[in-house]
Image (cartoon, rainbow, N blue to C red; front, side):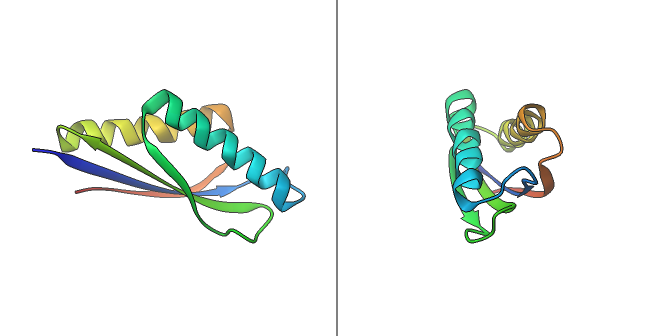
Length: 94
């Protein structure tokens, strides 16, 4: 049975002083996540705000446990490369 894991991460980016700076940081995060975890990532909200953003991450796996583990690793990775950037997150497995 195939499971789908969904993660929504709200980011706070205090070092950003423009939309361009924010998008560069988010783009970097997206590319690193895609490469390291083979997940789908998109910017999903707060598009017009300089210091906040929402990214959505989706993974497909053979079990809900594996999907959940991947999403937990994604959260840890984001926190590792940008400490303190995660304001909140919500995950689901379908």
